[in-house]
Amino acid sequence: MISIPLKRKNHKSVFAWFYAIITLFLPILKMMNILKNKHDMFKEKLVFSNFKVTLNFVLISLVFVTNFAIAQTGFEFTNKVYSKDIFSIQTLVNGSIKSLPILSKNGNDILMIQFDDLVEDENKNYYYRIIHCDRNWNKSNITEVEYIDGYNDDIVRNWEFSATTKVNYTHYFFQIPNKDTKLKISGNYLLLIYDKGNDSKPVFTRRFMVVENNVKPFVSIVRPMEVSNLRYNHQLNISVNMGQNKVANPQRDVFVDVIQNGNWDNAKKELKPVFISNNVLTFDNFGAISFKALTEYRSFDMRRIQARGRNVAGINFKTTPNEVFLKVDEPKPYSTYSFNFDFNGNYYVDNWDYTDPKIRDFVSNLSYYEDSIQQTFITRNELLDGEYQVSEKDLRADYNKVYFYLKSEEVYNSDVYVYGAFTNWLISPEFKMKYNATEGMYEVNALLKQGYYDYMYAAVNNQNVTDFAKIEGSWAETENDYTTLVYLSEFGSRYDRIIGYTTSVSR
Image (cartoon, one colour):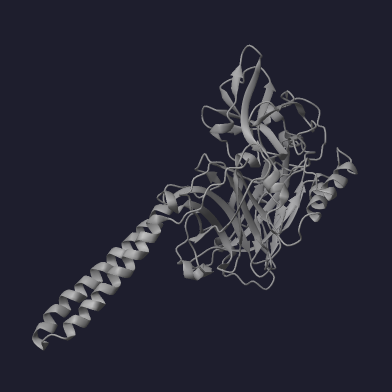
């Protein structure tokens, strides 16, 4: 039986509005009373009344400004979760999962944001706020009216309860743009979700970009110039044809960022053109745009709980939540490269145990180890409602406690973490593994929603340097996504535009 939390109005907000109405109308009533008095007394009381009106207006403004100011502090301009109650945050562009959410400025792209709250609290009121950022992910020096058409600080109105799950949760979802909020300019944006019913504390933040598509960078992935990295790295040569875009000083005003999969931490940032010829800018930097290729992501499949999926060793149904035990992994820094289809670190929420005939027939006719993971998700989505509303898979997918195991000697001078999109592309304390000396392996468990997941292991040393290759290895044959963003920061402009982008695949 599902326990349904009652959604009540925020009493603090109601009180604030009531106070505002009363305090604004009282001076008007007093003013009418003053007009009935003598002319010499009117001047004296008018000054006092005007002072009181001004004071009340200032106090009311401080109430709302302070409320919003709280929501703008205590968070970082990156992808991060600040509430232990929030899980499974996803940003879908036109219904597709991508490592980086990017919208076209003059297109019809839709960014769908969805997340789950696992704790029932009638006082919660989730609001979203959109902040325009510069190319370095700091707040831009422009006002909201310059980048938003409509309202900011709006409530997340859409939510549904989970259905037939052991772990109850509330699923929230909304889209950008919407009827109340539209974006006017390109650039980097930070989405802030905060709880207005809890002193406007930040709940989570998500980065996304809006691009103009005035230029399209040309990217070639070539063999590294450094002989020592020939087998292990990907090198990118980048050129941008500015076309009709006239820039007075490209070496001062044009910048390029390159992001591998969804990892902002190892991104190549603020690259400047090294050659300019016929309005074509070249950014190859003599081999400086080079990444560790790493290897294909590990994965596990718990879309079906009634049967063990890929890389699942066992399932315990006697607990709440269910316990899912993954097969024991081993380090592979020196093993031979082996190709397998992965999702480049992303994850996908789904429930194949659902008994809808369309889903049942789809699963029964599907090759269980489908080569194209992406096509599987696309086909599955076509069975859902064409117009977005809460999908059955988002409400019927249950939460399970997933156990990760890495059979290894203790890594010298380093901590080991599980890493992927479900860790917010961050080295997260919740996914730090503990070493079990008796079993000779690293272990950690995490609460994850039913679905398909990519992951890998990261070693972080005492200097806080992250090294994936130490456990996973690195091979030039690996398939990766590389997103190239072109920023224009013209002299005298008050914000950084994104005038073009492209996503390249290393195979």
